[in-house]
Image (cartoon, rainbow, N blue to C red; front, top):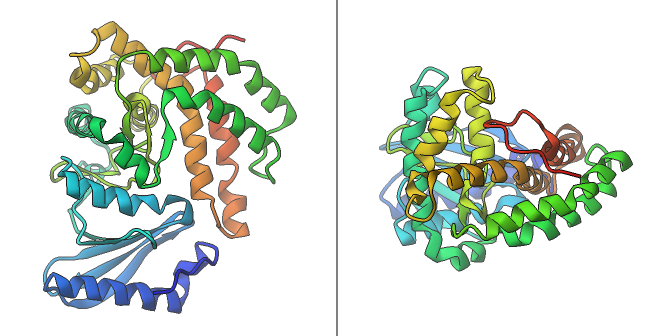
Length: 338
């Protein structure tokens, strides 16, 4: 199979690309005693597309991530090898092409709960996700070997400085203004201090999904899906997106007690390492420094996209990085002093 490097999402709308990946998918199905009956392409986005393959038994999904997220296929392979809980079990992967063939797992938590998972349902999947993260603590080298970014707290200050410099010279709309770049550089020492506290916490780095919400979790299991934003880092980096998603969908205020209830349930898995107050502070610090990983996720997502996709999505890179100044993050993390 050829490795087409034309820009996305147009690549995924070409007949030649579809014919090639369908041929790959059919060979993989055949190895599992399945036959393709029909296919569709439910969505095409700049950072990924999926084909739904109807077989003579259950449906199967063929996922193709963008060029900046090809490591996702390697992560899925590694999950299967290590028997990681609450993760998909692909029928086939091609790490070079980034392709994965995944059995249908049923509706997401959000779909199963009529558009909004309850707080209790959210806690249920976060408890399983915490178990998943802890199981991967001994396997950081293998995780990095898939190509996932190394954003452990000790490395984040250098990545922060490099990102500010790069976005200061980026083409629009991915560019930081000179004033915003100066503001970000002014808090770099405080950012580094927060990262140092995280690094010295005794909490082992592991895989951070970095886009964990109820539409990226299958209700049956639960099973965490869509690992294309993930990185190796402090586990609690997850909370930036997760708590913001809960806050938005439940129309909560940043100091609502439900958010702290979620934090405590999730971090229960680390109570053998630190007391409750320390764990809560670690979550707050991760929310404050976490916009860097989200900015870099969008950089990955915008790798080798066409100009229309760049114009639509590249602004998320500076916008996310500037969230380090957001005063109303869930549970009110302390602001970085200048």
